[in-house]
Image (cartoon, rainbow, N blue to C red; front, top):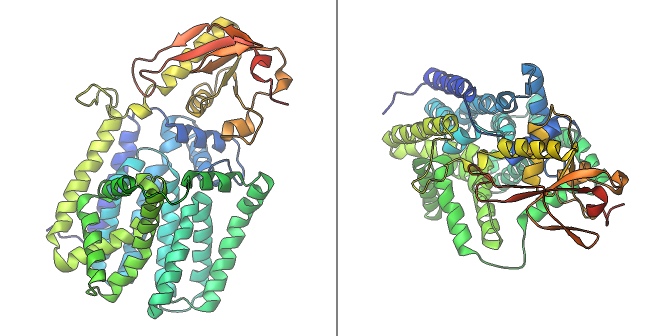
Length: 481
């Protein structure tokens, strides 16, 4: 077993972060559709956006301003830094919640090497921005369950508020803290401190509430639509797939340890600390399992469970099988390194069938440049698309080019951010545009032939045929005002 100390843990976390930042300079992937959208938000700062609260846009804006560049490196640079901050904050939080310095040291480095963290350190996501606030919340919480403190209560409320502005999943913590207070009296926070925390959190979240109120509840509606419930439909295969995916999110050893603690709880063999950490983590996983049963769930939807979840797994393993922590660190550490090199050699990393492993992150900018070339040949500077993926990359890749990018809309409630903020309207009249779509187009009853058919041979768009039509804007704005 590795002799892990606080100093060793911190040194490893800093080394891992430095490695990720250096290698990010050599990353060869394109921005994913969500990342490109977050970047565009960062160019138009607001208190809310179509599908997410605003913190990720503010963070990207800060880092691109800091670097004086809009390059992909600076769009993503915050990711490894924020995960480093999370890992460092989890060390004291774990020490206080478990009473073990060794658990704190192992939790910090274990978090830093989680496969999910390794992957999101390469790209930019809302989970990444959320986690430092969640870790700080847990640290403040660890103090408040022991003694009253107006200062820690206010800081915890601010952390919950800023975490919620990062991703609404931050509110899961509030639910788990309430459950814990109900079942475990020793984990209750004083009423005064609870009120201070709640007031501070609401104060921070208020601008986003106001934004939603003035934008038709766009973010809340999108979040609700993601649930996609249609009655009581039990998709056992989806639930099983989600549970299986969690072995990949935090690593096989740590998730197996969490499952063992679940079993021990059922049999009434857990300690108070295990019960506490169980309540702070497992209910979130179970909520997403239920979501998977009803409809579907992505692997990262339970991510907020694993701040306390890693603490739980580490604490249990230290008591029962400490050598497995070294095994876990080796497995997750190697996986972390592999992810980094996959991003650097993304074009050459292929599966046996020839498909690129990171294909969803490749070929997007190439398609945008092909569209731009087609628009130039068609003699128009206005490009219109109906696909969110295409629009996202057009805005980013052609950011310094003299093109106007617009989204086709049907005039109803917008289906995405681009339709909300950059729709093609009837004000364009009969201006010639380049309309990019995968379907056929008719104008006033007459079929239009494409001026080009783009068929990428690699990356995300491989196998797709994207048609480009040069036509009057009025052909596709008939239903718009």
